[in-house]
Image (cartoon, rainbow, N blue to C red; front, top):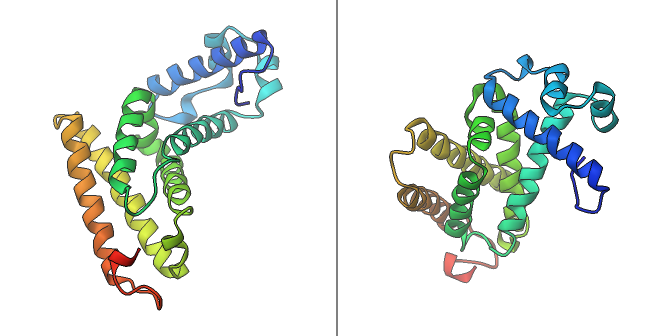
Length: 203
């Protein structure tokens, strides 16, 4: 249940306690399977009946957490366009990840959450690019290739930065990853042609 701010104050407090307890347990356990509803309820100081009133499973709670992150990030980059503002979108991604802190790093970088983080990044990329008229004119095959590159390159650059314990400064990793992503996309743009568009300058 994603809180909209219009719910009863008691409901808001309960949901905040569930989210806080869940985040703590995610950080403490390397494997999602080790987290139980019993442990979460004890941490949140609620009973199981209250938990099951809002969620059927812990997986549903995790999916909601990822969806909330997705919505927040998409809203954050909604004013940017691609491919011309890809560097700004990349910057917002790193800034957003830093704001979310360790829980975001855990969900993206831990092998136990690989499938979920891949899905999250896929959603980021698709939502950012589906608004682009240029992208919509690509064939489905070209769209898939471009999205695959962006999804794979973006997440791996971030994960490597985390694995290296952020020894490269935030500003530098933003600049470096932006260069790599933008050069890759610009090269793609140069190679793809449309009947009505002959050069990248015509975009």
